[in-house]
Amino acid sequence: MAFLELRDLQKDFGSVRVVRDFNLSVQPGEFVSFLGPSGCGKTTVLRMVAGFEEPTAGSITIGGRDVTHLRPNQRDIGMVFQAYALFPNMTVAQNVAFGLKVARVPKAEIDERVAEMLKLIKLPELADRYPYQLSGGQQQRVALARALAPRPKLLLLDEPLSALDAKVRVALREEIRQIQRDLGITTIFVTHDQEEALSMSDRIAVMHGGRADQIGSPFEIYNHPKTRFVASFVGTLNILKGSVTDPQTGTIDIDGNVIRLGRALAGKQLGEPIAIALRPEAASIANGDGREPLARGRITDVNFLGSVIRIRVELGENSISFDRFNSPNSPPPAQGEPCGVSFAVEDVLVLDD
Amino acid sequence: MKTNRIWSWLFVALAVLYFVLPLIGTLEFSMKMRRGTYSFDAYAAVLSDPRFQQTFTFSVLMALATIVVGVLLVVPTAYWVRLKLPQWRPFVEFITLLPLVIPPIVIVFGYIRLYNTSSWLPLTGSAMGTNILLMFGYVVLALPFMYRAVDTGLRAIDVRTMTEAAQSLGAGWVTILARIILPNVAVAVLSGAFLTFAIVIGEFVMAALLSRPAFGPYMQLLGANRAYEPAALAVIAFGITWLCMGLIQLVSRFSRIPNAGH
Image (tube, rainbow over all chains, first blue to last red; front, side, top):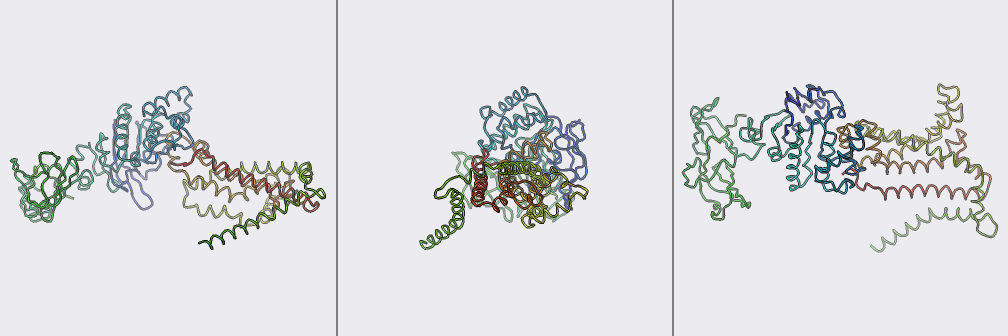
């Protein structure tokens, strides 16, 4: 049985429906991310789980207990906020101890637990500091320790890394994931950063327009997006527009390049416009390695980025970008050079919405 | 540029003279009780007067009660308005400013009509009842200052996120108010408290019309019957007000939380 169950959740703010038909089952110990752009409803769903927003319809069950109408302080959750939300009048140790004091845990046990938590976040020496004396990364670690100290059943992370600089963000996301794995705590993580969601999650719910467009593992979401939105939001994607030349054999025309997809295009008619998508890593320059070029064009951009070289090839109306690993023995191609682009037709996603 | 600076200094000097000269005059006059020499005789006379001690103690107690009730009323109200009813803020601010517009004499007459001995709540029927009425009157008078101070303090912290963080840790409203919100607006509350203290110590109209033995009516009584002592009393009252203002500055400067909220 799932540990967290969200059933037909709906939320209206006035006449605006911000969450609709949201269903999700989260297994014990699972790390699930809500990924989507601003305004897609991901934070609203999290706030409904936390109890800060009352659902307009639907139900929320945590550990078999219906908490839909319970107050936040009755739900046994821990939450970490984007703005840290440490209590400025309390030291680090007092912040971590707050939830335990509220629960009237004996003092000796509180001291022990606080020490344990500070060790977990690797900041035992900062116990007597005040929040304003800490860096952003340290504050967020303390916020995580504070949320975990009362041993909540469910951990909610509301864009906890968004306010941090890039380096700290990467380090802290690995640390959060490690701590989550060690404790085995069921976790919901809200983010608009696809890299965070892909690298940290067991499953991702990609949200769009108040509903989950797709829920699946990072591998599924990235490689088999079910909607055009998921395909374009997660990862970088080349979208090429053309027309159908033979729906039975799956032949299409992209800027005069005939591409045989090798699968029938159900519901498509001859001459109908079609859009296909291709991940940058699926394409490469055809350089006589035996792979037939599937499209021909001209190199319009070559950006040297250190470990990779980003190449942009114009096919006509469409253009396609892809990365090539840098090799000291192989200089980058010249701008303006004609070239062929090859890719496996199996990697082509036909977009139908 | 240079001419501008001269004019600026001239206006500053005029303003200082306008404020300071009467005070110097009062101070000088208060020390002239003994003929031909400066002395603190007027101060000694005032401080040894049992009525001074009684009225001053009464007003100090009223000020403390006003501060406690004011804090209990204003902090939860300002917090709730910020958290749950932000659209009501202009209305609440307007209400809190009303005591500056409505003269105290109008308020106190209203009280006497509402709470006289033949009313449903005859507060003026006993000394304690009248004291309570006076104290609530002072709460109303201090409302604009206390509300503004607390509201400014709340603006400096992220009230919503901090409340939600505390709730997610299991805290209820009383715990949140007592252990999170109040300590984080303590400096603002102290500022409001010192202003309230200064207002209550010098207040005359309400205390006189409710016939309570407060410091304000005592100052007036002394002023009507003596020469040097009222000047000494005025200097003492100014001193108390300045002390309050100085304490506001002090607590603001030595606040332990330089940037509450983040």
